[in-house]
Image 1 (spheres, rainbow, N blue to C red):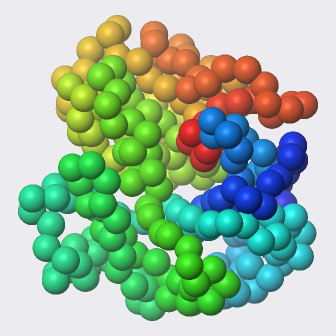
Image 2 (tube, rainbow, N blue to C red):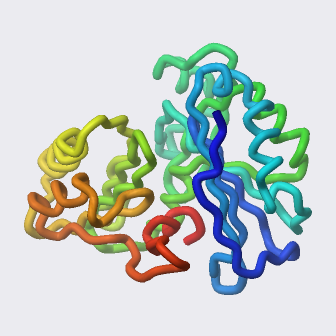
Length: 261
């Protein structure tokens, strides 16, 4: 079942770009205005196996309930939030063996290997072939990248040593920045707050990041009053939302930080 979890609309402007993020269980759409201000945002989820294996069906239902997917924009960028992925230093990346990078990570059948480059790294990642065909059909001029490339771009030049956690509904992305360089980027499925706490603390230990000196920024769909946030707050001294404030009604600003920033 495809669900539209929420949507916000300020002043969508078709002269600006449309961004579409596609994950294993979600589609997010948004457009931004001057100074990257959020103009509109829509978020859809889908969970059943049949719909996951038939992306065209998912997209048709999402478009039926979407404002943004039914408008023309000056440009479109598609961001794939897929796993597995691997980050390869640009000096070592070889385009001719792109499939091998993904095959080593146990690539699923009926997927195509893609890559995107940002700063010092190239991210190799798989995309379901039916989803790729649909995107290329509906948005033939769209540019494409991976979520990790997008996040790496935003974090580049940030000298602060920090862990960045981006929460979805059943997994979170964990990125570690140290000495002005990306040290780690991974996607972690979780079932409890203890799972999240373990991976964050373990990453700090492995990268020699002092607990009392390392900022842990949280963004995405995590409620400040949830058991998950309270558990993290209890053990992580420098835990804080990636962005404070409210955008509209009950939606905190940190929900959207890593989508449109």
